[in-house]
Length: 166
Image (tube, rainbow, N blue to C red; front, side, top):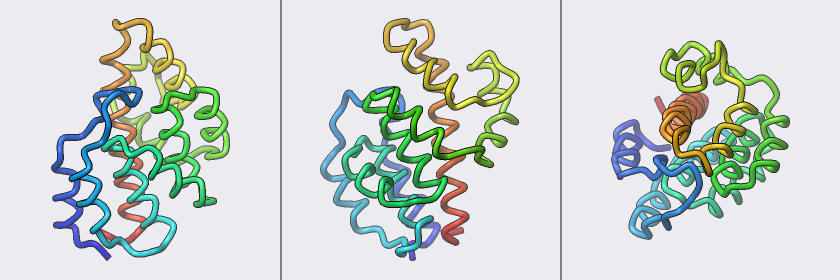
């Protein structure tokens, strides 16, 4: 199992979450570093790895992991990965598979998220719609990136805690 220090080091690489859709290929050096991390084999530990792969644009690697995890968290990473491809309808399908997730409540408590969405609560489907709109309407791009970063962080922390890494 990874120690918190190793995990903190993993998230120190410059992330690619500033891209709503994958535009930049992930750095092969980062992929090597991530592959060396040992998190264990539980579903939550594998979700931590899937989340790290999403963070650094290794969407194929994230997809391979998340589609094999039949939990709300596995479906959640699967949804995020498809949203970033971008394959918005497939992302919606996987968000439906998530059901109501505690991360939605966490995001609904974050002022920055609510302001970016112009909403009173986090709705993953509306967020997918925002990302799709931001692809052609640059005035929506920054708000969508703010929500994407907050969503990644909240789900990642949820999975780290569930994996017993902290």
